[in-house]
Image 1 (spheres, rainbow, N blue to C red):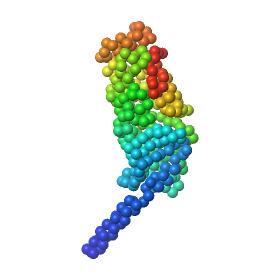
Image 2: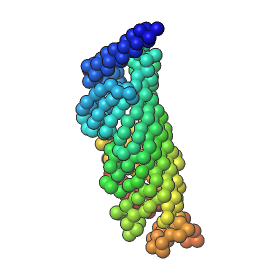
Image 3: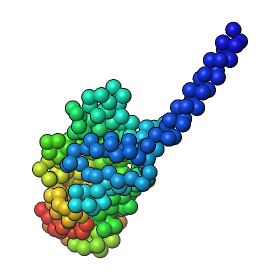
Image 4: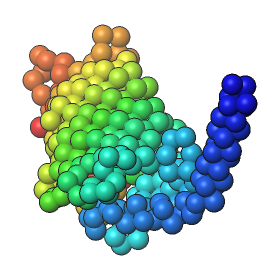
Length: 280
């Protein structure tokens, strides 16, 4: 009996050793490129420095997503792709479960489709807005941390919806009627959006800060490059309960009923150079 148990232990150890060598020697770079080749032409090209097999799946280091014209649109420190074993025979391993670290935050996504990747469901936490591509396109105007949820369809056309929660945000207003304020802050801001026909519609926009509170909506007309996208957003803002006197005074100069503290302002310009102009 002891001989049988000892033999089983030796066999298990040998098989584990073989598995380690197989994983180490398997051409992970080639496997990663074969898997990513399943992406439709509409998807960005995925470029990576190194690939390896790990506990999280096929792990990629120093990942860059490039648009069809070659522009880098996103970068991640690492991504791990874990195909579905049940879908390897007929669905390119779909759904893929993707985890990673980018822009200081942690991301989880599911890529799914009938035979090729068609949809993405994404959750992304603790994102640093000021340093993250493609989010860092406001010329340093917006800073803070964000949590994003998105549901995107890539085929037959790009469309989707989602939400963004921003915490500890600072927006620097360098031009327009509120330029004298220098910066506005928000303990919390919330955005609900939809995407279709190259238009990002902001259906809900809420702001809660020490200087002002606000709500509104609008749209971003997407362009290439992204920072050239045109803004058309209208927000009703009012001084917060303990707003500095300068904020209350500046808001009073904006168009609006003299007996009401709230004012409607319009944010125009581009994503790279947002401009606050007088409303409505």
